[in-house]
Figure (cartoon, rainbow, N blue to C red):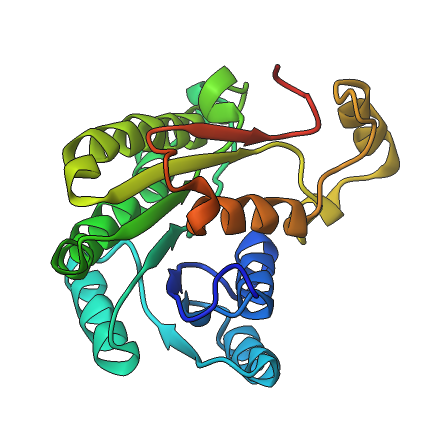
Length: 248
């Protein structure tokens, strides 16, 4: 029995990186997967084709999670196409790293809008069908820097810390409706973004990780499977840190 058999998952920002890994593992675990992409159109279309071989229903949507009206339209489309939404994974995000003294208002606003407002937009739209079904699992992808802060990432850290407060508030509001809300805080995960680091930078990162290796997208995806499945039916309002021990 696959852990997500028959469940419908909506995953934002899934054309690459962690989101792509989540979509792949969810399809393998029997989920019907609706996913979004924005700028990476070719990658989004390729992922839809790739996942279709898993034997479950797969559909990609080009949608901007940070746009309130677009988020509402997306959820309506997914419910129309799939019949329901059991799982929402808020993963869409960007970085605009620079020291605060050099940070522009635009760099601040862009990160807060795409990383934090998108979580509000999609959650607000998705809880309507979840409340009707009296069931749902919301999983928000935050970051260890939302717990610790990081020089040069005041905007990103603020957006990811905001997700933590939002996750817990939603858990308190919707627990009585059997809707769970949890967050996953990844540490150093190998993606296209980290691929730009040189060997020295990588060594420096590894020093602070007890497991002495970077995480993989599948490590985050497996944690999402746990929080999305019935194995975690009594878990809500929690932050699961997946970081090889970096910030314990």
